[in-house]
Length: 449
Image (cartoon, one colour):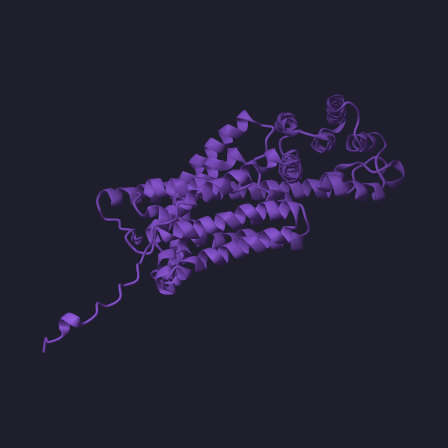
């Protein structure tokens, strides 16, 4: 029975379930982050685009604050006078100066008009003379504007053009639909107050959940579903590096060639990154499981866990937001708003498109790449704290909110990583990410309407 067995050839070696990532990965990742972060400082076209996006985002934030102040003026005029003076700190150019001046004139009547004129004169002094926007704002305060002029100015000032008085022949110097503007501001104020109350309640609930989880974890009663020993793992660093290279090249291509080049490269990089482990000889089943593309303990249960996880991570997010707010106070002239904030000034089709982009596409793509591939590779040989923080920092650095937004976005990315650690399935962090973006973008769209 055993004769000739010594001549039996050895079976082929089993395929390697994981591979050491190439030495090129981290240089590509760091290089892509630096290229995206430094591009506005190294290229005039990128700097001009960033300034345009920041200007629109600042106008949107200014509009929201102005609507709230107009609503508050119907309840407490003394408090509004104090808040209006603080609004002056948001003036950075002729457009914001014209906008703030129009708000002063609308809310403060004669005294407000005098302050508005002073704002325009101060801006003219800083600009070395009046600009077309400040000149039009002064004309509106002096003699009013016609409907055609208001329509023209709304292309540059947006909602603020509605605060301009009508010319004598069209309205006797009164602001058309002034009562409607005040009612709209009052509604915005009540909506904001309600949302603030909900946020406070959610934060309190999040603190309770977080303390409960930490207490159970300390007693050894809380377990997580993420298996750090699951393979493949390290190969996903290459997948992430491929995606990062595509983002970096896409940013350059979108700026100098065509925005469609950026979209094509990003989507192509995502596809190549996901297929890379398969190209390297790993099975799709192993790849999918390691990424977190599975139903976990059931789709709807994971969705519920994502919602609960989002509430529990709110205290962590608040800490990051607090640090970012402190940094913003040190550099008030720099914008920390996302370009999508300025996009909310567009019409409803544009707002719906941005909502789908932020609340559907971004969670699916970013969670697959960051909490799927990147977090899996980081957890190989690292603890939750190190893996989560590195994941969150790179995640934050790729966002366009600037260096001041990094603490807030790092906290968010760290929170999403903790949810991935808890559930393993990406359904939960995708749900948390979608809730966060959906509430922010949807709420802003409604308040700016």
